[in-house]
Length: 456
Image: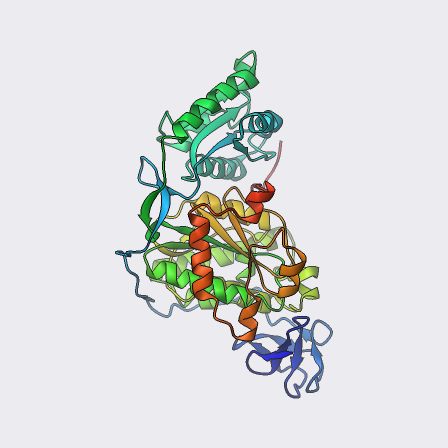
């Protein structure tokens, strides 16, 4: 079965690859999603396979962007729709009521694991917190502090070693104000038996956790992370537009959505810039895009070395094609803010977050920004999950059937014209009210912290 998706190519529903709908001459643009996704490098006959052997990117390193004026979109702040969440003492809302162990340094990873195994708390291993300098050190602190302050955690044990750069006394200044009932601290060098004391502290945190019960709160309190990984030729046709329509609805009801993966905006960044709510947001977006290009160049790496082998096997040929599909997760509402890596969301609406596309780094970045859950579209499949519920949405039925233990929601009926918007919306609300995702059922919870500089 073939689906025509605009202009001079169509997509085969069996393999996600592109085929020409008419003759295309060498040098002519290949158009998909209504935008050029590259150009023909040889003459292409009607019906021919269009891929890396006869097509190449149009992208170059230097692009000038023009501000098109303030973009506005209708957003309600008085939504009557509610869900059952956990209202914290500071006004934040969690969709889970858990106890987390956040270690200041990788040296105590296995202590954290033992404590988690003994108590049922959750821990997140990482290798950092010491021997880092400058921006890397500060980025590690921001990410870990954001997780300490995350509303899905009713209680947190901050576990330190005692001699690390990110020692507890210094780390407290990054965490900011905290509730002493909710956040506890333990330096393992300071005590005789860190396991015994750690278990006791976690048990006390669990007693505090049990003081919270589900309460009806407005869906405007939802903060949803948007992510794709292992994209294929269907991503921009099924799963990503489905998520984009969900994002529009949540934002229209006063909620927030968060979009990252900056290198996977290259080639489609103009669409996001055109939706800037103000010139200030536009300038921040331009600086984010150009800054990430300079990051690639500073390491003498090609800016557009993307898509991955898995993307290409799934039918994606160029970065423009990948990006034009990727940004559809962000829907059509105004971009209200652009955040730095590790920065917490400030405004309701759609915010962009500086950071790479790497799956583990990106889902950690989204959680640190305040996302209570993450919508993760995929055409190739992945088992990983973040510290928050990570909903895997398949772009095609083959993946959904093959990897039932990974996939939460199959968007492939969209390809046959089925309207899944309401069904998907209610599914996400169910997750917000406690329905377990596959990553939660499997116990797959991970974090990864972006590193750029020197390690001592």
